[in-house]
Length: 411
Image 1 (spheres, rainbow, N blue to C red):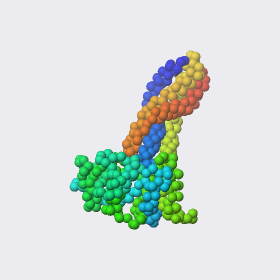
Image 2: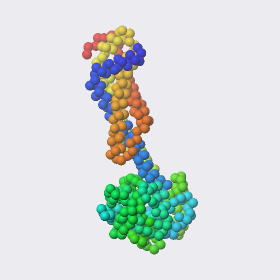
Image 3: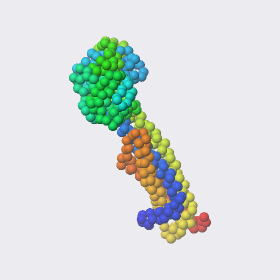
Image 4: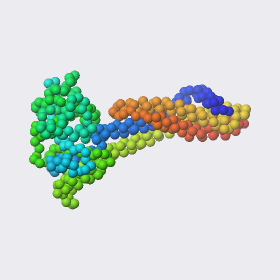
Protein backbone atom coordinates (compact mmCIF):
# COMPACT_ATOMS: atom_id res chain seq x y z
CA UNK A 1 0.00 0.00 0.00
CA UNK A 2 1.50 3.33 -1.03
CA UNK A 3 1.66 6.33 1.25
CA UNK A 4 -1.04 8.25 -0.65
CA UNK A 5 -3.57 5.45 -0.15
CA UNK A 6 -2.60 5.25 3.51
CA UNK A 7 -3.03 9.01 3.88
CA UNK A 8 -6.45 8.89 2.18
CA UNK A 9 -7.63 6.08 4.46
CA UNK A 10 -6.36 7.96 7.51
CA UNK A 11 -8.29 11.09 6.55
CA UNK A 12 -11.42 9.05 5.91
CA UNK A 13 -11.15 7.37 9.33
CA UNK A 14 -10.70 10.71 11.09
CA UNK A 15 -13.55 12.31 9.15
CA UNK A 16 -15.93 9.56 10.30
CA UNK A 17 -15.32 10.77 13.86
CA UNK A 18 -15.15 14.53 13.30
CA UNK A 19 -16.23 15.59 16.78
CA UNK A 20 -13.87 13.21 18.55
CA UNK A 21 -10.99 14.17 16.25
CA UNK A 22 -11.65 17.88 16.81
CA UNK A 23 -11.76 17.51 20.59
CA UNK A 24 -8.54 15.50 20.49
CA UNK A 25 -6.83 18.24 18.48
CA UNK A 26 -7.80 20.88 21.04
CA UNK A 27 -5.14 19.60 23.42
CA UNK A 28 -2.52 19.88 20.67
CA UNK A 29 -3.77 23.31 19.60
CA UNK A 30 -3.61 24.78 23.10
CA UNK A 31 -0.36 23.00 23.94
CA UNK A 32 1.54 24.14 20.86
CA UNK A 33 -0.15 27.55 20.90
CA UNK A 34 0.97 28.33 24.44
CA UNK A 35 4.51 27.05 23.85
CA UNK A 36 4.84 29.14 20.68
CA UNK A 37 3.32 32.19 22.40
CA UNK A 38 5.79 31.91 25.28
CA UNK A 39 8.77 31.57 22.94
CA UNK A 40 7.65 34.43 20.68
CA UNK A 41 6.72 36.68 23.62
CA UNK A 42 10.03 35.95 25.32
CA UNK A 43 11.96 36.91 22.20
CA UNK A 44 9.84 40.02 21.78
CA UNK A 45 10.37 41.01 25.41
CA UNK A 46 14.14 40.51 25.08
CA UNK A 47 14.22 42.68 21.95
CA UNK A 48 12.16 45.39 23.66
CA UNK A 49 14.42 45.40 26.73
CA UNK A 50 17.48 45.52 24.46
CA UNK A 51 15.99 48.48 22.57
CA UNK A 52 15.36 50.32 25.84
CA UNK A 53 18.94 49.88 26.98
CA UNK A 54 20.31 50.74 23.55
CA UNK A 55 18.29 53.96 23.79
CA UNK A 56 19.69 54.62 27.27
CA UNK A 57 23.22 53.76 26.15
CA UNK A 58 24.67 50.35 27.00
CA UNK A 59 28.19 51.81 27.08
CA UNK A 60 27.09 54.14 29.87
CA UNK A 61 28.43 54.54 33.39
CA UNK A 62 26.57 56.67 35.95
CA UNK A 63 28.68 58.11 38.76
CA UNK A 64 26.94 59.33 41.91
CA UNK A 65 27.80 60.43 45.42
CA UNK A 66 27.77 57.86 48.19
CA UNK A 67 29.66 54.80 49.38
CA UNK A 68 29.48 51.70 47.18
CA UNK A 69 28.30 49.82 50.28
CA UNK A 70 25.21 52.01 50.68
CA UNK A 71 21.96 50.62 49.29
CA UNK A 72 19.60 52.29 46.88
CA UNK A 73 20.14 54.40 43.83
CA UNK A 74 18.97 57.84 44.78
CA UNK A 75 21.15 59.50 42.23
CA UNK A 76 23.35 61.06 44.87
CA UNK A 77 20.56 62.89 46.66
CA UNK A 78 21.01 62.67 50.39
CA UNK A 79 24.40 60.91 50.11
CA UNK A 80 27.63 62.28 51.54
CA UNK A 81 29.00 64.79 49.03
CA UNK A 82 32.20 63.60 47.37
CA UNK A 83 32.00 64.33 43.65
CA UNK A 84 33.35 67.75 42.74
CA UNK A 85 33.26 69.96 39.69
CA UNK A 86 37.02 69.39 39.45
CA UNK A 87 36.33 65.64 39.19
CA UNK A 88 34.06 66.41 36.26
CA UNK A 89 36.74 68.56 34.63
CA UNK A 90 39.33 65.78 35.04
CA UNK A 91 37.03 63.31 33.31
CA UNK A 92 36.21 65.81 30.55
CA UNK A 93 39.91 66.54 29.95
CA UNK A 94 40.70 62.95 29.00
CA UNK A 95 42.34 61.62 32.15
CA UNK A 96 40.46 58.37 31.46
CA UNK A 97 41.47 57.33 27.94
CA UNK A 98 38.51 55.01 27.29
CA UNK A 99 35.89 57.73 27.79
CA UNK A 100 34.34 59.42 24.76
CA UNK A 101 31.63 61.63 26.28
CA UNK A 102 31.24 63.11 29.76
CA UNK A 103 28.28 65.13 31.03
CA UNK A 104 26.97 66.29 34.41
CA UNK A 105 23.29 65.56 34.96
CA UNK A 106 21.44 67.60 37.59
CA UNK A 107 17.75 66.86 37.95
CA UNK A 108 14.82 68.09 40.02
CA UNK A 109 11.03 67.93 40.09
CA UNK A 110 9.21 71.14 39.19
CA UNK A 111 5.84 72.48 38.16
CA UNK A 112 5.76 73.84 34.64
CA UNK A 113 3.04 75.82 32.93
CA UNK A 114 2.02 77.16 29.56
CA UNK A 115 -0.89 79.43 28.74
CA UNK A 116 -3.01 76.28 28.34
CA UNK A 117 -1.97 73.83 31.07
CA UNK A 118 0.07 73.03 34.17
CA UNK A 119 2.19 69.91 34.54
CA UNK A 120 4.54 68.34 37.10
CA UNK A 121 7.70 67.00 35.53
CA UNK A 122 11.48 66.71 35.80
CA UNK A 123 13.99 69.30 34.66
CA UNK A 124 17.51 68.23 33.73
CA UNK A 125 20.44 70.62 33.66
CA UNK A 126 23.35 69.35 31.59
CA UNK A 127 25.79 69.88 28.71
CA UNK A 128 25.47 68.93 25.02
CA UNK A 129 27.46 65.70 25.55
CA UNK A 130 24.41 64.39 27.43
CA UNK A 131 22.54 63.96 24.14
CA UNK A 132 25.45 62.02 22.65
CA UNK A 133 25.61 59.72 25.66
CA UNK A 134 21.86 59.08 25.60
CA UNK A 135 21.72 58.67 21.80
CA UNK A 136 19.02 61.33 21.88
CA UNK A 137 18.13 63.12 18.66
CA UNK A 138 16.10 66.26 18.14
CA UNK A 139 12.67 65.97 16.51
CA UNK A 140 12.12 69.69 15.90
CA UNK A 141 14.30 72.71 16.51
CA UNK A 142 17.95 72.56 17.60
CA UNK A 143 19.95 71.22 20.52
CA UNK A 144 21.80 73.79 22.63
CA UNK A 145 25.59 73.97 22.30
CA UNK A 146 28.53 74.36 24.70
CA UNK A 147 28.24 78.15 24.61
CA UNK A 148 24.64 77.94 25.84
CA UNK A 149 25.65 75.48 28.56
CA UNK A 150 28.29 77.97 29.73
CA UNK A 151 26.38 81.26 29.39
CA UNK A 152 22.98 80.14 30.68
CA UNK A 153 20.24 81.44 28.39
CA UNK A 154 16.66 80.71 29.45
CA UNK A 155 15.90 78.16 26.76
CA UNK A 156 14.41 74.68 27.05
CA UNK A 157 14.26 71.43 25.12
CA UNK A 158 11.13 69.44 25.84
CA UNK A 159 10.15 65.79 25.51
CA UNK A 160 7.17 64.74 23.42
CA UNK A 161 5.04 64.17 26.54
CA UNK A 162 5.62 67.77 27.63
CA UNK A 163 4.80 68.99 24.12
CA UNK A 164 1.51 67.09 24.20
CA UNK A 165 0.55 68.21 27.72
CA UNK A 166 1.52 71.87 27.55
CA UNK A 167 0.96 72.68 23.88
CA UNK A 168 -1.89 70.50 22.60
CA UNK A 169 -2.52 71.09 18.92
CA UNK A 170 0.15 73.83 18.77
CA UNK A 171 3.70 73.80 17.43
CA UNK A 172 5.72 74.29 20.65
CA UNK A 173 8.76 75.83 18.94
CA UNK A 174 9.14 79.44 20.00
CA UNK A 175 6.45 79.10 22.66
CA UNK A 176 7.03 80.12 26.27
CA UNK A 177 6.76 77.82 29.24
CA UNK A 178 7.26 78.75 32.88
CA UNK A 179 9.39 76.69 35.24
CA UNK A 180 8.63 77.66 38.84
CA UNK A 181 7.20 80.88 37.44
CA UNK A 182 10.28 81.75 35.33
CA UNK A 183 9.74 82.03 31.54
CA UNK A 184 11.77 79.86 29.14
CA UNK A 185 11.66 79.74 25.35
CA UNK A 186 11.11 76.30 23.78
CA UNK A 187 13.88 75.87 21.20
CA UNK A 188 13.48 72.18 20.47
CA UNK A 189 11.39 69.04 20.86
CA UNK A 190 13.36 65.86 21.59
CA UNK A 191 12.72 62.64 19.69
CA UNK A 192 10.55 60.17 21.58
CA UNK A 193 12.38 57.53 23.63
CA UNK A 194 9.41 55.80 25.29
CA UNK A 195 9.69 54.08 28.65
CA UNK A 196 12.93 53.35 30.47
CA UNK A 197 13.93 49.94 31.82
CA UNK A 198 12.24 50.99 35.08
CA UNK A 199 8.96 51.83 33.36
CA UNK A 200 9.44 55.62 33.54
CA UNK A 201 8.34 57.91 30.72
CA UNK A 202 11.61 59.26 29.31
CA UNK A 203 9.72 61.82 27.23
CA UNK A 204 8.26 63.50 30.33
CA UNK A 205 11.27 65.77 30.80
CA UNK A 206 12.62 69.26 30.13
CA UNK A 207 16.33 69.77 29.44
CA UNK A 208 17.99 73.14 30.01
CA UNK A 209 21.64 74.32 29.87
CA UNK A 210 23.73 73.54 32.95
CA UNK A 211 24.53 77.18 33.71
CA UNK A 212 20.82 78.06 33.55
CA UNK A 213 19.96 75.21 35.90
CA UNK A 214 22.59 76.27 38.45
CA UNK A 215 21.49 79.91 38.30
CA UNK A 216 17.72 79.38 38.45
CA UNK A 217 17.01 76.02 40.10
CA UNK A 218 19.94 74.85 42.21
CA UNK A 219 22.94 76.99 43.10
CA UNK A 220 24.78 73.93 44.39
CA UNK A 221 27.14 73.62 47.32
CA UNK A 222 30.45 75.21 46.40
CA UNK A 223 32.86 72.81 44.77
CA UNK A 224 30.60 69.75 45.15
CA UNK A 225 28.10 68.29 42.70
CA UNK A 226 25.55 67.99 45.46
CA UNK A 227 22.37 66.80 43.75
CA UNK A 228 23.51 65.30 40.52
CA UNK A 229 25.33 62.60 38.66
CA UNK A 230 28.05 62.32 36.08
CA UNK A 231 27.25 60.34 32.95
CA UNK A 232 30.17 58.94 30.97
CA UNK A 233 30.24 56.75 27.88
CA UNK A 234 33.02 54.81 26.20
CA UNK A 235 34.11 54.55 22.59
CA UNK A 236 33.11 50.87 22.48
CA UNK A 237 30.91 48.62 24.60
CA UNK A 238 33.91 46.32 25.08
CA UNK A 239 35.68 49.14 26.95
CA UNK A 240 33.00 49.55 29.62
CA UNK A 241 34.53 47.31 32.31
CA UNK A 242 38.00 48.78 31.82
CA UNK A 243 36.55 52.29 31.90
CA UNK A 244 34.73 51.54 35.15
CA UNK A 245 38.00 50.47 36.76
CA UNK A 246 39.88 53.48 35.38
CA UNK A 247 37.23 55.91 36.63
CA UNK A 248 37.29 54.21 40.03
CA UNK A 249 41.08 54.49 40.24
CA UNK A 250 41.05 58.15 39.18
CA UNK A 251 38.36 59.21 41.65
CA UNK A 252 39.93 57.28 44.54
CA UNK A 253 43.23 59.01 43.79
CA UNK A 254 41.59 62.44 43.56
CA UNK A 255 39.66 61.85 46.82
CA UNK A 256 42.83 60.70 48.63
CA UNK A 257 41.33 57.35 49.62
CA UNK A 258 43.63 54.71 51.07
CA UNK A 259 43.46 51.02 50.18
CA UNK A 260 41.45 50.41 53.37
CA UNK A 261 38.88 53.11 52.59
CA UNK A 262 35.59 52.39 50.86
CA UNK A 263 34.72 54.32 47.72
CA UNK A 264 32.87 57.53 48.56
CA UNK A 265 31.06 57.33 45.21
CA UNK A 266 29.03 54.77 43.31
CA UNK A 267 29.32 53.68 39.68
CA UNK A 268 26.39 51.99 37.95
CA UNK A 269 27.21 49.97 34.86
CA UNK A 270 24.15 49.85 32.57
CA UNK A 271 25.71 47.15 30.39
CA UNK A 272 25.81 44.79 33.37
CA UNK A 273 22.26 45.74 34.33
CA UNK A 274 21.08 45.11 30.76
CA UNK A 275 22.76 41.70 30.80
CA UNK A 276 21.07 40.78 34.09
CA UNK A 277 17.71 41.89 32.69
CA UNK A 278 18.27 39.77 29.58
CA UNK A 279 19.24 36.71 31.63
CA UNK A 280 16.19 37.14 33.88
CA UNK A 281 13.89 37.42 30.86
CA UNK A 282 15.40 34.29 29.32
CA UNK A 283 14.96 32.32 32.54
CA UNK A 284 11.34 33.39 32.93
CA UNK A 285 10.61 32.58 29.27
CA UNK A 286 12.18 29.14 29.62
CA UNK A 287 10.21 28.42 32.78
CA UNK A 288 6.92 29.49 31.17
CA UNK A 289 7.69 27.44 28.06
CA UNK A 290 8.31 24.36 30.22
CA UNK A 291 5.01 24.88 32.02
CA UNK A 292 3.26 25.32 28.68
CA UNK A 293 4.93 22.16 27.38
CA UNK A 294 3.22 20.21 30.14
CA UNK A 295 -0.12 20.99 28.51
CA UNK A 296 1.32 19.69 25.24
CA UNK A 297 2.16 16.39 26.95
CA UNK A 298 -1.43 16.20 28.17
CA UNK A 299 -2.59 16.81 24.60
CA UNK A 300 -0.29 14.04 23.38
CA UNK A 301 -1.71 11.64 25.94
CA UNK A 302 -5.16 12.55 24.64
CA UNK A 303 -4.06 11.60 21.11
CA UNK A 304 -2.74 8.26 22.37
CA UNK A 305 -5.96 7.51 24.26
CA UNK A 306 -8.14 8.26 21.24
CA UNK A 307 -5.94 6.16 18.98
CA UNK A 308 -6.17 3.24 21.42
CA UNK A 309 -9.95 3.58 21.47
CA UNK A 310 -9.89 3.67 17.68
CA UNK A 311 -7.85 0.45 17.58
CA UNK A 312 -10.41 -1.30 19.79
CA UNK A 313 -13.38 0.01 17.80
CA UNK A 314 -11.80 -1.03 14.49
CA UNK A 315 -10.49 -4.41 15.55
CA UNK A 316 -12.75 -6.25 13.12
CA UNK A 317 -11.79 -3.83 10.31
CA UNK A 318 -8.13 -4.55 11.05
CA UNK A 319 -8.82 -8.30 10.89
CA UNK A 320 -10.55 -7.94 7.51
CA UNK A 321 -7.67 -5.90 6.09
CA UNK A 322 -5.13 -8.42 7.27
CA UNK A 323 -7.31 -11.22 5.93
CA UNK A 324 -7.20 -9.74 2.41
CA UNK A 325 -3.44 -9.26 2.43
CA UNK A 326 -2.55 -6.15 4.43
CA UNK A 327 0.76 -6.53 6.22
CA UNK A 328 1.30 -5.54 9.86
CA UNK A 329 3.51 -2.67 8.65
CA UNK A 330 0.58 -1.37 6.53
CA UNK A 331 -1.74 -1.37 9.55
CA UNK A 332 0.88 0.28 11.76
CA UNK A 333 1.58 2.93 9.10
CA UNK A 334 -2.12 3.79 8.76
CA UNK A 335 -2.61 4.37 12.48
CA UNK A 336 0.66 6.26 12.73
CA UNK A 337 -0.40 8.49 9.82
CA UNK A 338 -3.75 9.14 11.53
CA UNK A 339 -1.88 10.25 14.65
CA UNK A 340 0.43 12.46 12.60
CA UNK A 341 -2.50 14.05 10.75
CA UNK A 342 -4.19 14.86 14.06
CA UNK A 343 -0.98 16.36 15.42
CA UNK A 344 -0.03 18.32 12.29
CA UNK A 345 -3.48 19.83 11.83
CA UNK A 346 -3.47 20.69 15.53
CA UNK A 347 0.04 22.11 15.07
CA UNK A 348 -1.03 24.40 12.22
CA UNK A 349 -4.02 25.67 14.19
CA UNK A 350 -1.86 25.92 17.31
CA UNK A 351 0.67 28.00 15.38
CA UNK A 352 -2.07 30.45 14.43
CA UNK A 353 -3.40 30.50 18.00
CA UNK A 354 0.11 31.07 19.35
CA UNK A 355 0.73 33.94 16.92
CA UNK A 356 -2.53 35.63 17.93
CA UNK A 357 -1.75 35.14 21.63
CA UNK A 358 1.80 36.47 21.22
CA UNK A 359 0.49 39.49 19.30
CA UNK A 360 -2.07 40.20 22.03
CA UNK A 361 0.58 39.92 24.77
CA UNK A 362 2.94 42.19 22.81
CA UNK A 363 0.22 44.83 22.51
CA UNK A 364 -0.86 44.51 26.15
CA UNK A 365 2.64 44.69 27.65
CA UNK A 366 4.14 47.03 25.06
CA UNK A 367 6.64 44.47 23.74
CA UNK A 368 7.71 43.98 20.15
CA UNK A 369 5.75 41.37 18.20
CA UNK A 370 8.51 38.94 17.29
CA UNK A 371 7.59 35.81 15.35
CA UNK A 372 10.56 34.46 13.33
CA UNK A 373 10.41 31.56 10.85
CA UNK A 374 12.26 29.39 13.36
CA UNK A 375 9.20 29.56 15.61
CA UNK A 376 7.02 28.00 12.89
CA UNK A 377 9.66 25.31 12.34
CA UNK A 378 9.58 24.55 16.06
CA UNK A 379 5.79 24.23 15.94
CA UNK A 380 5.86 21.69 13.10
CA UNK A 381 8.75 19.76 14.66
CA UNK A 382 6.92 19.54 17.98
CA UNK A 383 3.68 18.51 16.26
CA UNK A 384 5.48 15.76 14.36
CA UNK A 385 7.21 14.59 17.52
CA UNK A 386 3.92 14.41 19.42
CA UNK A 387 2.30 12.47 16.56
CA UNK A 388 5.09 9.90 16.42
CA UNK A 389 5.70 9.51 20.16
CA UNK A 390 2.09 9.25 21.24
CA UNK A 391 0.85 7.48 18.12
CA UNK A 392 3.50 4.79 17.98
CA UNK A 393 2.18 2.53 20.75
CA UNK A 394 -1.42 2.39 19.41
CA UNK A 395 -0.04 1.77 15.90
CA UNK A 396 2.17 -1.09 17.08
CA UNK A 397 -0.68 -2.56 19.08
CA UNK A 398 -2.94 -2.49 16.01
CA UNK A 399 -0.27 -4.15 13.84
CA UNK A 400 0.16 -7.01 16.32
CA UNK A 401 -3.47 -8.06 16.39
CA UNK A 402 -4.06 -11.67 15.38
CA UNK A 403 -6.23 -11.64 12.20
CA UNK A 404 -8.34 -14.64 13.31
CA UNK A 405 -9.02 -13.14 16.74
CA UNK A 406 -9.71 -9.74 15.19
CA UNK A 407 -12.28 -11.21 12.77
CA UNK A 408 -14.12 -12.83 15.66
CA UNK A 409 -14.24 -9.53 17.62
CA UNK A 410 -17.69 -8.04 18.17
CA UNK A 411 -17.76 -4.35 19.20
